[in-house]
Image (cartoon, rainbow, N blue to C red; front, side):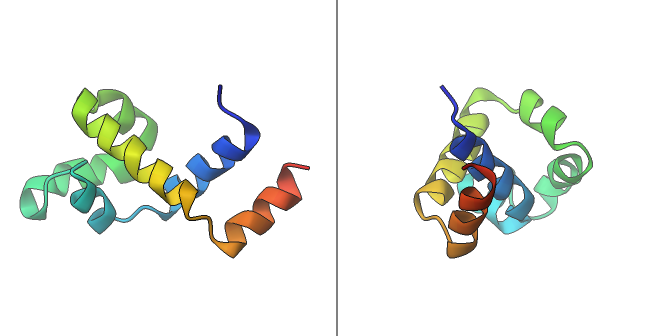
Length: 84
């Protein structure tokens, strides 16, 4: 079950992901090979995620999960403000 806190962490991660994060996690190919995927990610993130092969979607989920484990003070504050 996804909690409100989980949803906040997913949303924070999504808006703070950059190309190098996706490349390092193996979600998109590095360099020119990943240009189209990066463009698709920026244009329509939800459809990008729906079309990812399972292995890459799992890599994206692992990356977001790892970010949630190391919550920043800002994330903790936002969680406190919005999820009381």
